[in-house]
Amino acid sequence: MAHYQGLIEKYRDRLPVDENTPVISLNEGNTPLIELKSLPRLVRKKVRIYAKFEGLNPTGSFKDRGMTMAVTKAVEGGAKAVICASTGNTSAAAAAYAARAGIACFVLIPEGKIALGKLSQAMMHGSVVIQIRGNFDDGMRLVQLAAESTSVALVNSINPYRPQGQKTVAFEVVESLGDAPDYHALPVGNAGNIGAHWAGYSEAACEQTRACAYCDGKCPFHHEKIATRRPIMLGYQAAGAAPIVRGRIVENPETVATAIRIGNPASWELAVNAQRESGGWFAECSDEEILHVQKLLARTEGVFCEPASAISLAGVLKDLEQGRIGEGTTIVCTLTGHGLKDPDTAIAQCVKPLTVDAELSEIEAVIREHLS
Ligand SMILES: *Cc1c(COP(=O)(O)O)cnc(C)c1O
Image 1: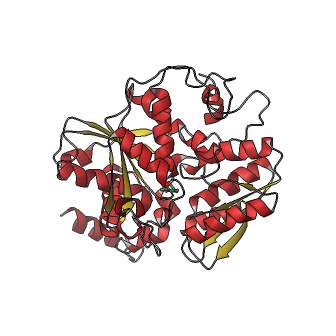
Image 2: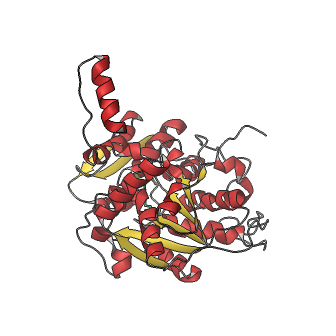
Image 3: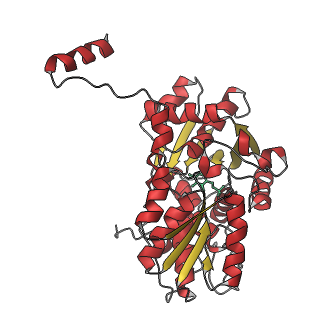
C-alpha cells in the first residue's frame, strides 16, 4: 500500500482541491476504530461499542482534519497569516498547520480556561497567543471582526473548509465497519463536528454525482456510494454548557470539559439539522458523569481521552441504561481529543503516587499489599 499522506490525498476526489492546490498536511486522519471489550460487559448490554480515537491525530485532536483543509485553502488563496478563537484544540491545530505552511498564526483563548497541553502546543509551534478576559464566545465574535478588518484568514469552524476536512471521519468509519453504524455519538461544543460527521455519512450513502457549493459541477463529488445507510446521530453537551439541549444560549458556560465550554454554538442550526434528519437526540451529562467515564475508559480499556471526549461515551452508557439505545446495536463514539491534553484534570482525579525508599523490601511490600 502506498505511504499514507493524510486525508486530503486519500479523499482528494471528495474534497474541494485540485492538482494545483498546495496541500498542507501532517498525515492527519486514518485514526484507529477501537472496539471496547470490557465496557459492554461491565454495563451488561449486548452491544458493540467502538471508539474512533481522534486523539491520535498529529496534534492530538480531530481539529487536525479541518485544519489541514482550512490552512491548505488559506495558503492557496495567498494568505500570509491565520487567526482563530479557541477553547484550546483549534489553536493547537492552527498553530501546527501554520508552522507547517510557514505562515503566521494568531490565537485568541479564554484567560486561564485552557488545558495546559493545548496551551503548550500553541506556544511551542510559535503562534501569537492572545489571552482574552472573556470566554470562547467573546473570542469568536472578535476574530470574525478582526478577519474582516485585516487580511488574516479565519480558520474557525465557520470557515467552510473545516467541515469538509472533518467529514472524512465518517468515510473512515464506514470503511472500517463495512457500513455506517446504528448510532454515532459525539460531544457537541461549537457544534461543527456533528454536522460534519452527518455530511460525511450522507455523502458516503449517496451515489449521485452532483454539484456542491465548491465545484460548480466541475468535480465528481459523491461519486462512489460506500454505505447503504446513515447512523442515528447523538450529540452530548455538558450540563453547565448545554445550550442546544435546553434550547437557549448559556451566558456563562461552565464545565470541566473545557473543549465544549461554549454557550452560543456557531453551528447550532447545522447540528440540529443533523439530529433531526437522522432521528437522533441531544442530551446532557454532568461533570461528575464525564470524569467518571473518562477514568473508566482509561482503566478498563486502556484508552485515555480528554474530558470533553468522554462525554460521548458517558451519554451512550446512560442512554443504554435507560433503554433509549437498544441492545443488538452498533455504536461508534468519537473520542475527539487525547487525555494528555489536560494533565491537570487527570491528575486531580487520581490518588497521588507513593513515595518509598529505594529498597527492594519497600517495593515488595507495595506489590503484596496491592495483590492481596
Ligand atoms: C473542538 C472540540 C469539541 C467540540 O467540537 P465542536 O465541533 O465544536 O462541537 C469536542 N471535543 C474536543 C476535544 C474538541 O477539541
